[in-house]
Length: 193
Image 1 (cartoon, rainbow, N blue to C red):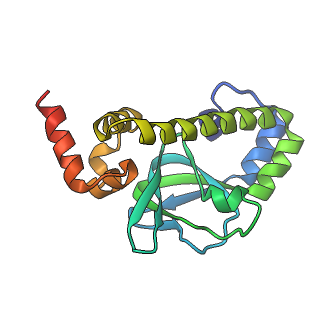
Image 2 (image 1 turned 90 degrees about the vertical axis):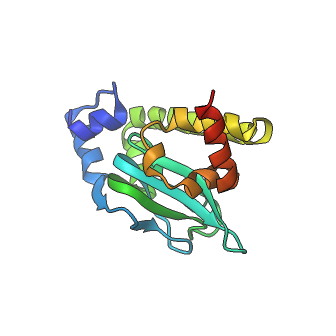
Image 3 (image 1 turned 180 degrees about the vertical axis):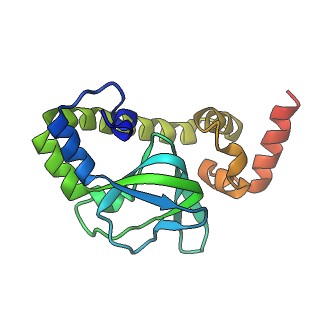
């Protein structure tokens, strides 16, 4: 099986014709740090698999404050899911920025939907991934409502061990819903434990 398909789909085996169909739909793209994959107001048609690097999805509120919604590292998928899967306007409400040089593979929702019909096994995998993503989103929301900032930071470090040093402090603070000062205090507390 092609290397990128082995990476994306792990232990799944496809026929040669199925592999060819999938590879035909995947579009490789290279991003450099600071480059935007998507900006609020852009039309959203694709979602992206992260092969290398790190991207960040963030929303800017009316006062200009950034709210980091997601970091995506190797093995994760990213897009503006509100626009991509929503029933209304297909314009992005968030921004996606490359924060560590990246190689990504994109697929349009239209092409992916066609693949789901043509390759039933892919449909099963997609359902499992969506179930996992939904559970993860609910878990993150519950954690933000019930855990202390220190506990949320520890979970962040466990979830993203390879990027903490390459992500700006204010991005991490924004993701956790705290100030930079609180993040510094938390780090000092943990270091002294």
